Amino acid sequence: MSADQRAIYEESIASKRGTPPPPMMAWLASPEMARHATRLGAFLRYDTTLPPALSELAILVTARHWTAQFEWYAHKKMALDGGLDLTIIDDIKNRRTPTFADPKARVIYDVAKSLHEAKGLSQPLYDEAMRVLGERTLVEIIGLCGYYTMVSMTLNAYQFPLPDGEVPELD
Image (tube, rainbow, N blue to C red; front, side, top):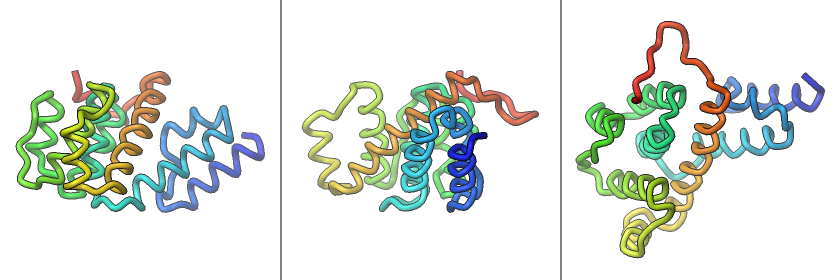
């Protein structure tokens, strides 16, 4: 690694993550991009207004959209650890619309799904998201979907393998 690449790698290890995110190894080919991407990723993972289950919900919708096997593998465990119900996770995996008890979770799912499939939000969904989530949280959901789209694309393009013994869950 160059000195710049090493500095970014070390910064990532010293962050709340403790380890560099897997796509950073590809991003290091462009050190400045790696620096900004990993900082954005750390913010989106640890410092938004969302509890882990809700941010992981948006990430799983994104991973499913891109059929990003590694992303799904990593974030399914984090979603379960964060309290997201396995039934919801399985519904997303199988491309079924989950049933949500929490209105925030339902709106986050609808927003993430619409961003990926419709490439935006209808006015009624936007209005509901503003009412239920508020503007800051809506912006953070959009950021999560965008960032994890970049992560998914990187993982897919570089064909990051699953850990030994793990099998792909997404078809």
